[in-house]
Length: 141
Image 1 (cartoon, rainbow, N blue to C red):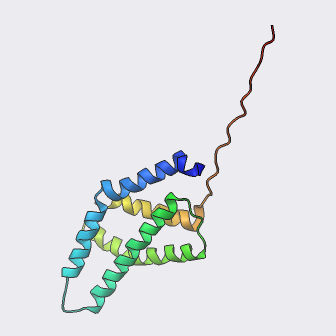
Image 2 (cartoon, helix red, strand yellow):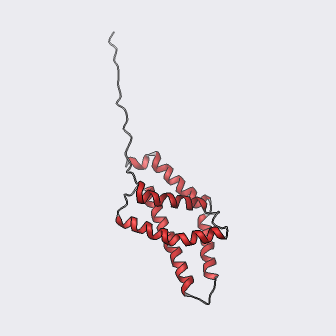
Image 3 (cartoon, rainbow, N blue to C red):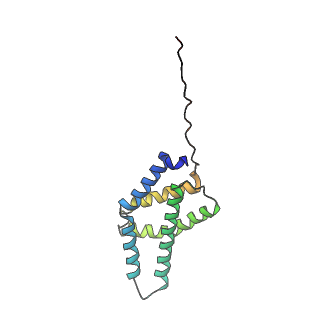
């Protein structure tokens, strides 16, 4: 319970909220999905695959952010999920930077890169800081 009162929890929560909402990432991601639905109605298989990979990458980044905020220890399932999300998100990130819309959600991309590193290699459990013992000196006069 002390983890939820720590500065690590508060800073992770604040950074995640800033990366998602201050930059308007949900709005730009919604515009991206609307653009995908309007693009090329004649061929249905490729846009459908493109849309589902974007949806899967978005769900996985949200799960990664929640796991990072709550300091969840990654097991094999999380690591496979992170690799799958990275493979699904990479083409979308490249295309969004080619058409210059990726600059708008750059903080979310940076957070996603850090989370991939954190889940695959750098996870550290939260350890509460030990407080020094209180020493009281009593003067007898």
